[in-house]
Length: 296
Image 1 (cartoon, helix red, strand yellow):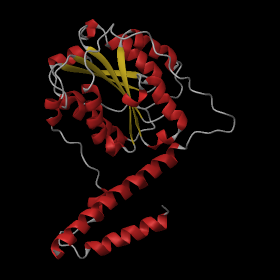
Image 2 (cartoon, one colour):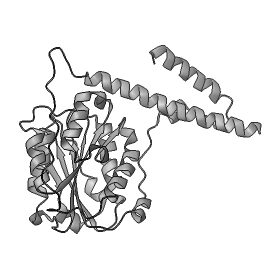
Image 3 (cartoon, one colour):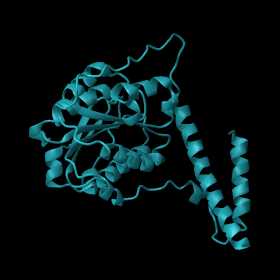
Image 4 (cartoon, one colour):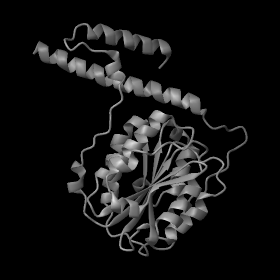
């Protein structure tokens, strides 16, 4: 939709607002929803032993407001699991920061407290190296990991890895040997790229359809948190040593000459336009329903 069409939609909104008693303001339509802090999902999840590490992208391609949505996603997801699940958080870019391990979580399991001081790192995107770091350095007994628990990585990224000295094949093979289940979450319009989707496939466990999630906008992460919780809770009894031999991962084909990655700035602008239009459409539906109610 071009700029003129967006302008027309805005004019229509203001025209409709004049006939509504609640004093509609366009800023209301564009205000992003906050993630709820409820834990209604806990009762629907078996209280199995789970050790979950969030491996979150903190690279410079992500805006500070987007990183805040990502933190809220982690907090909300943590609150949706019963008390036999414990968590750890690793942020990565071209470097790593362990915000808390399982022992730290055992001492203070309050998600709001644990996430309150998390700041975005900035830098490039070393996703494969982050998977190795989490598997090798955090999913171990002296960091609070339990031998009887299902070992899970939740890897959240907004795009392709860049500048990473490691390939997915070698780190995924090590994770498979350790019995680590991997969920890959791609956020943003960068994942309209076939190459980006193939990266999610390369890092996730099999079958890919059960271990990959995509949020079109960072504001959609509320729904993604619910979907992730449902996928994890549907797994039963997968602990270290129960998995079979490593499953071969599909190789990521090299880029053909003349192929270029989507411009991140263009994708961010497109994402913002689509997000704004989604919220405008939701507000128009609300106004139409109110008007229809008064007529009847």
